[in-house]
Image (tube, rainbow, N blue to C red):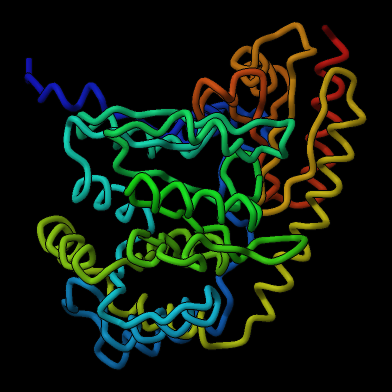
Length: 388
């Protein structure tokens, strides 16, 4: 028997892919399954972006590139972040990675020692807690509360901070709830970060998918550029999940460490996808606007449909493409309900517990599916729940 390193016991996974595999197995057996478990836009990558990638391949962008990313792409990212966050950004403060997840992993690897504490949102993207545990640090959950639109209370954050707090992870718009931090939240967070001298990893991967209002970033507040690592990328906004194209913006010293981690792991990010990434940020935004408008239409339909089912209540999310309905009035736990809906109704969802202990009593449904399928899923859910 092969003996594995003890640290592997601390590394978690993403339940979405496990449920997706179960759903595909049911489909292979002839069952009809509607997929509301995967957080992946169901729109094609815009044609102009695909054409840019193909042209880049023809132009020879098929070999190794700089570990930190192509300079021409980092310049475009720096300009984009400067424009959208209202700060000055230099290309040396940008690193490009194959997808945005490496920014999570590399930030924690570079900053966090075993005795440190990292505060992270719960319910939240499961990779946060997984990587904190992997490096042997203490993961401190920060509850997102339904009664404040799935934000967290600043008092809860203040109570979670200790003299060992090294990093706070923010995610807005948020997965799995669709919650959005407000300007007054970010101002208070910035004050605490400066007061207690900790860093912020700001996951803004859904910043391009907001339905009301405008995106606000912690980077916009005084003193925060020096202590913030911004995570963003192309997967969600430009429907480029399989292209694996993400980036981080951080102080130059942090970028140098992330670049060394890139050298030791991935070498570099695919060059022709970076050229496509330039086209995404600088080219027409019509496809993005159309996608967000369609997501809003689906959001309204799924929220109204869920609220019409006895025993379920659902807030209307401000961003991303997830709803997080409360199912505590139903006679099954959220884990049992997710299993029941998959096996009996053919609707793949995720239990809120896949995103942390404070997700108990909720389900996560992705509305990155057609309106027709969403309406069929709602009918199946209602029928299945009526059988209780």
